[in-house]
Length: 178
View 1 (cartoon, rainbow, N blue to C red):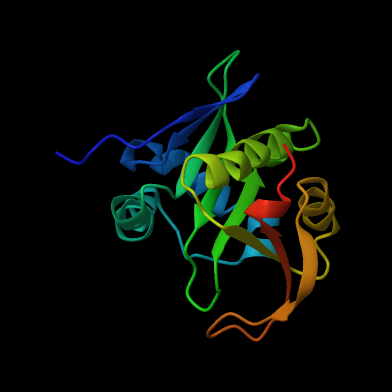
View 2: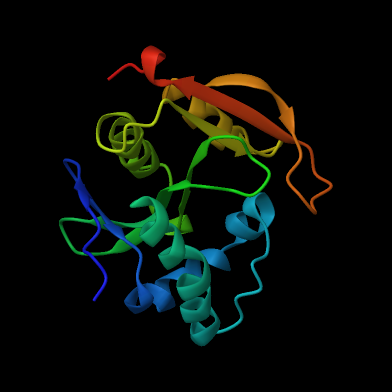
């Protein structure tokens, strides 16, 4: 039996490690318009595809590093509103903080609340020296959120097998503001 992985809590949210039971939600999130536009197509065409994706991409990172993709759950009603995580991405130096919400839950402060919680956990719980983030040039909302989290724009980067130039942000543990 795999070890339990840590969950996190904020004033309004729970951040729980993604598992196979979250496949219907992951299917919906990864096919939402902004995910497809700003993050990219993961070719998840069914709930079964989402289960395979979780098994092949999410669970192994948790097992290897102890952190990964968390489902953001609203406390007051248990609604799954989005995902936030710390990701070890191919072609990216450092651990990437990322976030995405379903359209109905945007502009309510949930992304900042969840990402700020994981930013603090990255440094205090997982003892990372630095976190990074990437976003597309036209994802202004993501850029504003990264700025609000204290990450600073550092330049441009390309991920393997991707022709799109991405903006790279960084925050060192020594510069982290609570």
